[in-house]
Amino acid sequence: MKVLDLDIDPSAAGLSLELPAQYRELADRAGQLASRLAADDHKWDADGLFPWPEVAVLGSHGVLGMTHPEEVGGAGLPRLAAVAVIEALARHSFTLAEATQIAANGPAYVLSTIGHPRLRERWVPAVLAGETLVSIAITELAAGSSLAEIATTATASPDGWSVSGTKCFVTGGSLAGAHLVMARMSPAEGVRGLGYVLVDADAPGCVVRRVHRKIGGNATPEAVIELDVAGVADEAAVIRPDAGGFALAMQSYNAMRIGIAGICCGVARRALDLAEDHLRQRVQGGRPLSSRQGLQWRVAELELELEAARLLTYRAASRVDAHGFPDALDTARAKLAASRVAVSSADAAIQLLGWRGIVSAEDHPAERILREVRGWTIAGGTSESLLNMLGRAALSTGGGGR
Image (tube, rainbow, N blue to C red; front, top):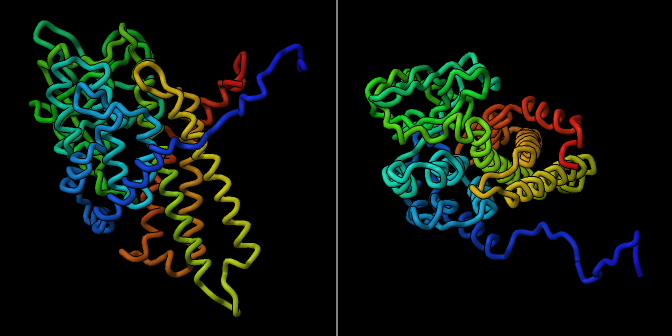
């Protein structure tokens, strides 16, 4: 029988958004490894210590190179596998999840896929081994979400590129061996003149001027980088305005953004696990708190929001282009939903745990979880800028991917 004049195969069961069994096993093993490595997780944030030995262990198990092509020493796994692993790591350690995110989804991946072979040979193996980081340097004091106002310049000459400007809030900037710098590389106005150039952190004129103490996540510092560097090799111009330019740069950043969504989903799960365990165990008035309808509703709402965010995150990670970069609207939806539920879940955990949520201690991590995840509604694209993007798409001709 035809429906709307179409013959539909009834054996087509429909859409499945379950993770493949291999990815679930991979995530389980990542969680087990993180639980063994994260004994000093509280100290890492409190003292601002990046756990190089533990990150090197992740590298030795192939975790940092999950998404990188096999020819550069990676595993060549799809973005979805990396998101599942990062989510699992975040349930045990925000720091280890962020370190993995920077390696698997960040600038080193850009070098692996579209960088010059000599850049790949120099930087990627060290990143995948957990020996160094490559940071991404975009934000400026006068150009936060408004990238069209970026003032850092990269000027070509017979002696190489000269890079000049100041970048603030460079994640891992004081740790990195090199910085992928967004700079104005042509006279074109606005974002059309922007591209990426890789600058060695040891180059004369590349200086860390300040390291910020943050609300949380201090194991991976945010640095102010001042650049007055000359003689940067032509091959270090990774993305040029006349060869993909800003559009390709933003496509590559979508890989970072989907990793952030994965971190946020894992953090939300961890916060809810803490709260739900407490509600089941804590007895008042002769019955557990978990039997109180008001508390059940609050948990149910957050579980619903988390499941929606996870599905958006998995979908975005599953739909990538030839370079492995996810779609901009998909990642905007995922990052927005995941960061919101992570902050809401962490805040709710503090409330539901009572005094245990307020105490700052290794065995009472709820307040630290909130501090660590709070910045993700700002970094990686503010919630407001993502809403602008989604709103413009929805109201444009054809709608927002409908």
